[in-house]
Image (cartoon, rainbow, N blue to C red; front, side, top):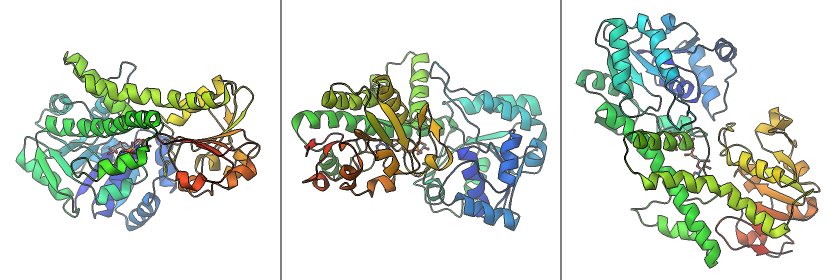
Length: 433
Ligand code: UDX
């Protein structure tokens, strides 16, 4: 059991802190945002992540997890301090490291000899060295700074923490590296030891590669549409080749969220700063940016004009099982529909529970309510409730069952014989109307 501090209670910090406490460590999570710490201390987590609330309750009840706004309280006798603050994108695509430097500034006075600083935040290669300089200068000692990137997917972050594919530890000091490995010793994931800049690059390269898989399959989906082929079967056939792998080949309206758009932009920015041509990297984002527009074009091709038509947008979060709306493609879809004059109503299994309006549009309380009297339905997130919704209910609720499925939720076979028009991504259109 080690005494650990986690700085930043955003998505990564909170999941990391709670899961480390569940591993048997004594963890103090710290955030400068008082209202957030108050909320968490009342037992109400500020984000939805399956399984997290239960772990938080167990660990706080056991006394192994606490929260504070005081850097001193969190850091003074911690053996390791994880930094998990946000590194949001600046307008030019670069990662804004001001929260990271501010956090390091706040904790520096309380860092003890031998305290290891572990960077969890996603940072450009080389950042660890700047942080070490900052710490060494302010503390007057040589602080060990280790890069230990996270690979947690929203919606399955708890599972990813306990059963991750790898733990990457980037350090130039074997003792610090061994200590970080010891913190994770109860987890089965293989450990990769490397230097800090390589660890930082592993995180960016992994996210850029996953984003590239998605943009690639989306480009293939456009070709499938032109050829009358089915992208889901193409992806299954490709995935049977172990060198390719079946994951991240789901075609759709594009990737969103707080990681892929930001991390590909930051990597691109770093390459541009170093005057390195990276045409492949620039295309990933370009393909993704065009997905919502290309999808709306299918709607316009069907209707000519959607002025005054009622459009039900189903699913708003950037993926299922999260309440995260950041960079969600649904927002682009809604903006485009609205700019074409459609009357848009939204529904999301999680967001509709707490809000009545979002991005200037009203939200329905149920999927049925959103669909009632609609001229078209646009699916933006593959929530289970939406996937499980029987396709034969669309014609009974809608004025005319025009379904535009941006996440390929239904098998085309399900649509056969139904009076619906069903257009999805990279698959033949079913014209039952
Ligand atoms: C991602 C990485 O997976 C994770 O390792 C990293 O640490 C944080 O960023 P996350 O953003 O939570 O995780 O979600 P992910 O499941 O990777 O999906 C990202 C986006 O890609 C979603 O909008 C999703 O809908 C989309 N996606 C994913 C596809 O469009 N097709 C796919 O095949 C897979």
